[in-house]
Length: 70
Image (cartoon, rainbow, N blue to C red; front, side):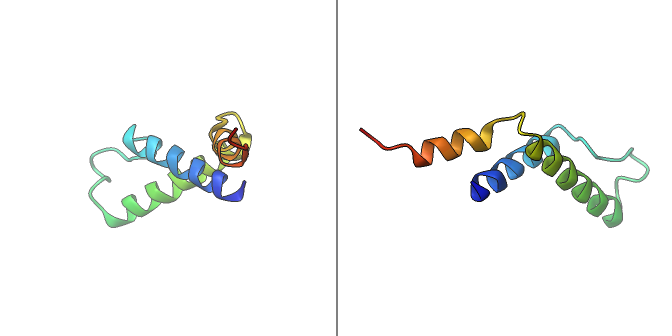
């Protein structure tokens, strides 16, 4: 389940990055510091969203990997 949660966090983080959540306005966006802060912010958001359990991606992955194939 731990690996499934990590994968879910990464998927959520990728979705946040694609939707440009956590990015700064144009005047600050061109610095390495802003990029680093945005990355940390997305990591924090993705961890909180994953821990809430509302996405359900981790549970689906876990169930898919642990169910016996008939």
